[in-house]
Length: 553
Image 1: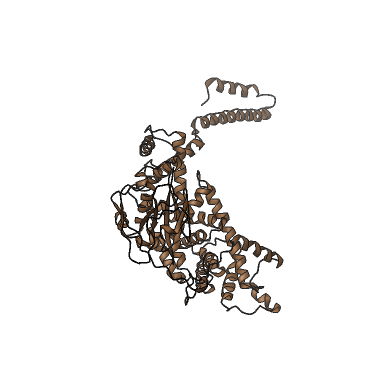
Image 2 (image 1 turned 90 degrees about the horizontal axis):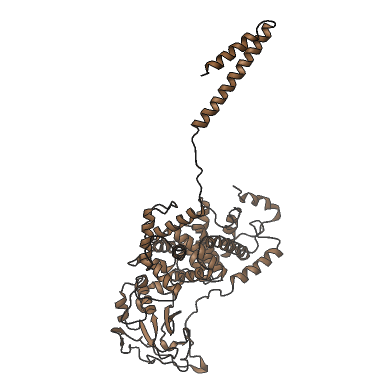
């Protein structure tokens, strides 16, 4: 290991130090030799370590790779197979990009422009919100890929026949044909068969511009998808220079005479607006009027029902011998929660089991608390959705109205177990993943409560329960107990409260105020108190006995 000269130097050093002080010399020589050898060993070890130490490169995740992964995820979602989203735009990813570009009518270069990428990623984020439009697209011939063209045309303000998988029937405007396809997707008859049905479509010039406007009555389709307990969706399409604008109403037994339009905006009217041209004049006979024909498509008028004879005193619309159904609370939940907050502050804080005096107020406090949690959670989900405005989120959540209406209509008459079973069937038939439905419902809870839209909020809560998130049944219990968005029914509320309580007692993760396990005992006591089964206030001497019921585990 050592060179010959080094050995000679060491030997000479030892000989030179022998003589006068042999013991000291010996020790010094040994130390010197040891230090030199030790130094050489250390140096050689350092050299070996420097040579043998493997060189590792720190993996870096640059913003460009993060964007690439996002692009690959979006491509895969829309059926352009880019492979594993690893952030490397290799041959397979470039081929997927070219397919996407070809589908959209862009130059198929395999390299995305900034606009092409932004549109792709924002469309993916928008699709994650879900809604009927996404569900229908999944069932169409082009799958979710059809959404890309639909949203492209929407963004550019143009409409092309066949975009998004929709066709055109007998020369009907594209917007009307699209609605016919949408209705046919949830009904047994085909679109062509629906157009043959008496009363399905009626024509009139509702805005006085000399062009036909269209009214579609979904009650004729025979599908409960579009109908509630007493009304069905009615679509009125008014002509504008940019195309036909759709207006949605919930009604039953209407004709074109029931609507008047100014440009593209329509409203329901008791009497025909002046200047309105009626395609079908109302007649007292119940038989349908002869159908017309537009571009080869038979368009028949709706059967007209005889109007009731005017009663004395101007009570023409009064129907006797009919018990009115309890009405849902139309007051603002936001305003209600503000009042509850003031009462809570004046009482010195939230009610607990030990000081429960007013079960309805106690549940009102918990309702407003859960509403706040739902808003905060949904807002966090919306923040993760890129390229979608709040207006677009609200619009897609509003589209859930016709979807959840059949279930909302059953809340006052159907038990919680039976309705949960129906919701689970809806989930299985929706062609959306559990995660996507859950995210959609969470976002729409935020949208509904933020805007005081109880139909959206309550419908989103039902979907949450349908996907297996049983603690959300508490929200439905609160709506029924307080009468927001549904007729007030403390009795029906009990089943939903029990569904949430049973889930939490069997280990489900709390979704509202998870740091307050004592809420469970409070909701049990207060919900029982709504139907008169709560015990009398606990005397002060026995208050301590009630404390162990507040579990902190």
